[in-house]
Amino acid sequence: MVKPAYGEGFTLSNTSNKLKTSAMAICFLIAGTYMAKAETGRFMDIRGAASMPVGHQAFCAEHPEECRASGQTPVLVKLNKMLWEELLAVNATVNRRIRPVTDAELYGVEEYWTYPKNSAGDCEEYVLEKQRELISRGWPRSALLITVVKDRHNAGHAVLTVRTDKGDIILDNQLEVVLPWYSTPYRFVKRQSEKNPASWTSISDTRVSTVASIGN
Image 1: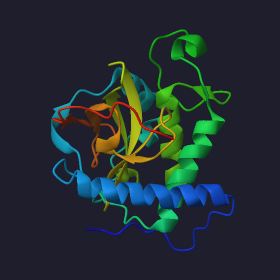
Image 2: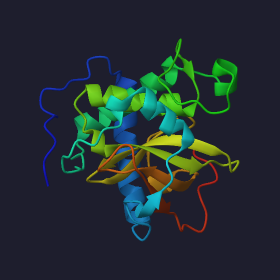
Image 3: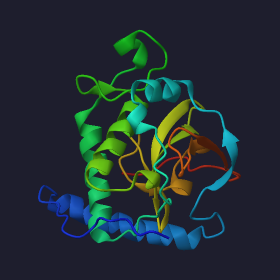
Image 4: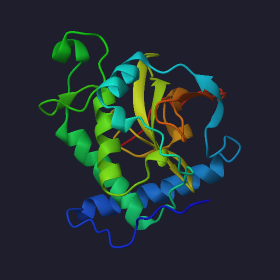
């Protein structure tokens, strides 16, 4: 497996002590959750090909450079304290920076995937911006996958899956914490392929129930 060429020399000069404390607390949370739910699997169960979301089709038509297969071997990020804190910082910063506004209000259509316009957007804009920000920091695209889920109200929702050696981790705009995929209150449906960002794969989510609520 090819190791990602990043990690050394990164610092988080703007990370507050509170964020660092939260990072350590959540690290312990994740470690405990892995032990308690080992039978679930740290990684999503990926099955066959899935249909590409209509919104992503239009996004790829407008941004073809973001949807080309690189031909490189997909990688897992070797997660350490520094990279974990970077994930927390990017997730929190983007969530604060973007105002939640529907596509219907912004563009007059029900579904339109793009980068945030005037610091506003819906769940896909949050995901695309987090993906773009992490890639700009050197994170491998193959480990940053747009993922479609059903939320607590059974409505469609998008999150970002980060593939690490600790398992699949979720960045989200509806939750204030970064969690393993199986500790979120969602039903996972499909996500981008690790090998080709323009292809999608289905997810077999056979958990009996999802988490009803998650504390701050």
